[in-house]
Image (tube, rainbow over all chains, first blue to last red; front, side, top):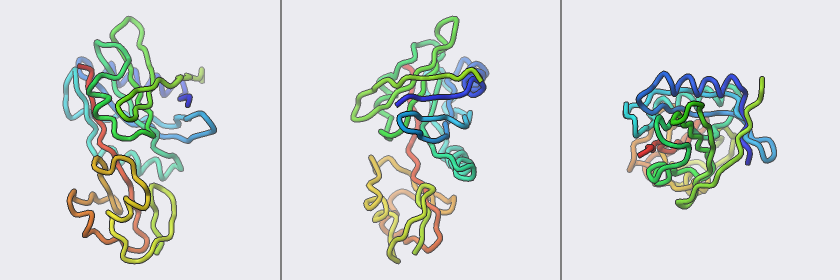
Length: 138
Length: 69
């Protein structure tokens, strides 16, 4: 599936990741599925309780609050995002080991280079498969 | 009874437990799922005893975490 998001939501992910430096940032994404495209309609930047440059986790209470908001807006949970402050945008062994929902999209934003790099993956049965990411101009 | 499961309204028989709902909904990797009923988390290990009521709203939440190391 292709993951599509608006420029403003992409910018929100980048801004959250930069704000959380040197630690990893994280959040969840909500939207709808249209054919073979996951359309992200809302990004939920959340706190990283781990406060670590190498680890993240999402507090279940924060996750539930975001899901509740999605339901109120008629959206569905589509997955999550997190940042890699100094490594490439690819799932680490820990990312793969802790990816329990094969239906989710796992977005990773790397800040290792001069320009941010955002990639998305489906992770199932210990294997990560890249998904195309389309950032709309609007 | 009527339940709202992950945002979808569904009919289920009375007396349904959270454990049975997880089975019927074919929830993926259920060992790593946290369940909320009406915005309250159900304690792990009590899914067999947690009986759902008409009108309950249920969400299945997966642990989310990882790392770049």
